[in-house]
Amino acid sequence: MTSAPTDDIMIQATGLTHFYGPQPAIDEVTFNVKRGEILGFLGPNGAGKTTTMRILTGYMPPTHGQVTIGGHDVIKDSLEVRKLVGYLPETVPLYTEMPVTNYLRYMGSLRGMNNRDLKRRIPDVIELCRLNDYSKTIIGKLSKGYRQRVGIAQAILHEPELLVMDEPTIGIDPIQVVETRRLIQDLGKQQTVVLSSHILPEVSMVCERVLIIHQGHIVAEDTPENLAQTLQGVDQLQVEISGPPKEVTTALRTIEGVIDVNHRNQPDREIYLIKSGEGLDLRDEISRVIVSNGWGLLSMQLMSMSLEDIFLRLTTDEDTQP
Amino acid sequence: MRTIKAVAWKEIQVFFTNPMAYIVALIFLGVTGFFFTLDLGDPFPEASLSNFYQGATIILVLLAPALTMRLLAEEQKLGTIELLLTSPVRDWEIILGKYVAALTFLIVMIALTAYYPLLLFWFAEPDPGPIYCGYIGLILYGSAALSIGILTSTLTSNQIISFVVAAGILLLMFFIDTRVDAVTGIWATLLSELGMRSHFNDFDRGVLDTKHVVYFLSVTAIFLFLSIRALESRRWR
Image (cartoon, rainbow over all chains, first blue to last red):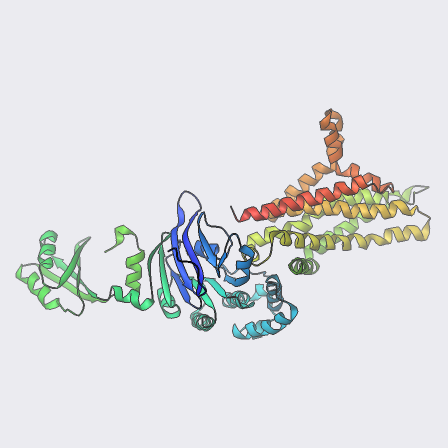
């Protein structure tokens, strides 16, 4: 990807690598984000999401690689980049002894907002983040969910062009999660949003495009719908059969329509995962083959591939893959 | 400039709403008051602030680090440093803002001792020179002490470590010229020039020597510069 930065590209990240020790936290991560897009980073804990977010916001430099945001280099032009970005770190660090409004005023003035802007925007974000009843409360006395809202409020206060949110719904109750997601979707209508999450439905609900990151590598990149479709051509059956595994596997493979057979040896159980072409119901044929060979058919289950399965498929370790 | 003001104003608010700062001020007034009255038992007490200045410089070795220990260590502990460093604020603006806040509180605290000289002027006829000079010296000395505390606070997320290390450095710099006899040549010169107490003593005599002013301003500048560097290095660690 060596295309020149254009006006509609907000983030251009090339070959990002970051080492904390001998192991890279992220390795050669390359992606682009268009202006106005909502991009989700999906991956399990420790995949490198927070590292990527911290590099994007200029909190720390990558060991190798380059990022430009709005055409400005994150390292060389750090101050310009920081003006464009609103950031919600994962742990939502707040000054616990300050009241909400004072805190917002402080964060706003750090972002170079003058008094008039502050007077206009602070009531707006308090309304938007539904903090009305708590605007004078000391932050330390707020619950986790409300602290999260204060964190979001400070991130959007200065109307940044790019909003970076690291795990925006972690540790808050389900009703607040729904509200927060709706808020992010609303914000995404005017701003570019990059968020990270380890919750798949969240990303597929909120984001227009998903990057799946695992052990520091981007392993998939697509719209949530397309990611689902890449594996939708496949149905999966889980069958438990008593019989000699080798012969059973060979026999199952010969059935027309079967794409792949995986044998899983569990204590006292022989489980087979059978993949078949989409829409083909092979249950009749499979049971006939098993019975005619004199083996025992103990159970059979149709598994449809959900996004969660894709996620597990894409981001679990090699040796546990089906 | 606006961001320095924002950082300084926020820290000043914390100082004036935080019990810690009031405890520091209380101890400062208590200890310096004690030193101020040391002479009163004499049949012919001297109408000067010498004892007060001696006491103030000693107690500031402990109190200046107590004022500064929170300033950056807490940001690192809470993680708020992440938002601070990703805001469009330069590292030197952060350090300078924090320093201005600490210096403001220190000046207010020192100003609270103004009734000592007022008492002297009321009941006696003290020489005003040493009194004015002493106050200037005290603020310069305090400024240098605060900048040392800011450096140690930048280097750690643990406030106690920041306090202990800064107090240790200050105590060493305070008394280091007493060891001047143990060495010779350039080392002797170095030790005698480094000693904070010897630089302060001329102010107490009513001498406003540029050499001493430059000394305290240099110490302040060097330690603030090191603090900025230490803060910058956080990004690369």
